[in-house]
Length: 460
Image (cartoon, rainbow, N blue to C red; front, side, top):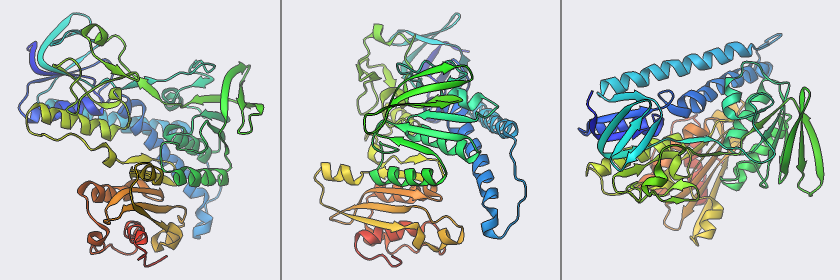
């Protein structure tokens, strides 16, 4: 194994692995360094195991609803330990697949903590050193703690702990109503856990279109969750087998609530500890590494991609950033990445997905626009499947081009792909109106949502 490369990639999450593979495809000699497992947080403690568990929870929910479809299922129960084992098998299979891809593309892989000892040099514990023309930093994020909620891994836990435990709590208090908090809230409630979710902002999913969070809150309340929006928690105190949470409700009244566990889901922070970036003069902004359009840092040989450069903190955004960065390094691409065309997905039930500008954003940027909204209750496929919650909402400019699209309902995370394509390519409502959408499908909601902005919806 050589100690001289064209590119050193630090971090083997979605950004690092995709960046390394693309660099190899472009003829670069690459080494990938990772302190833990291939796949990073997304594959091992985030996206993949959580979605496997969410699928199990949704199946359990469906079986409990079977009577409404004319199917009798008596004495339905679940075995959470088996659900958990399945989620780890999914992770293991994908991890092995990722390792195979690295070998296929002749990427050297080194396991161990990395530190930059110069603008072209990386040392990996205990005693390995590499040099390269360029270094791509893709170390992702770590769990974020807040005052008053000291994570102990037992009673006060992070999402990492939640995915690692093999026994469900009887009750849980979830601090944070963003994507992670909402997904865990749905998951636990579907399996019968008593759930309270608290969000400091006035609605769930505060980073997305207002109506999405409002609709999800209505759905969560129907499922029997306690939803406390506009509330602020101050501290959690373990008292025997329970945790006492003190919070201030939306009317600024101090209250207390007890739960078997508290899940802290208030976001993550960039993982840069021990990398030696400050000593090299790397610039930061709001705690994140500051980069140019080509993802170059203030040190010319160092590039950074993924969650460590800031929102959107999404695996697919990180992968695309890495691909773009490497292609720009190789001179194969000149334009940067349009972040407004990166979709966001939340895997609750109903699912939530969004791309582009919200109605609020469009107003703030002084666009002349129209709103289209099509309810799933008017969609044949949704009614046939008993999944008529939600809607497709579109924000269309004066030229008929899509500024933003927001979906809540069955298959929203799949439906958003067509809307993302439409926005990315700058297609108009008139052009999409010529595309025949199969019936009955959820994708019909895309066409109807776009036509509704022009006052031309056929089924609403």
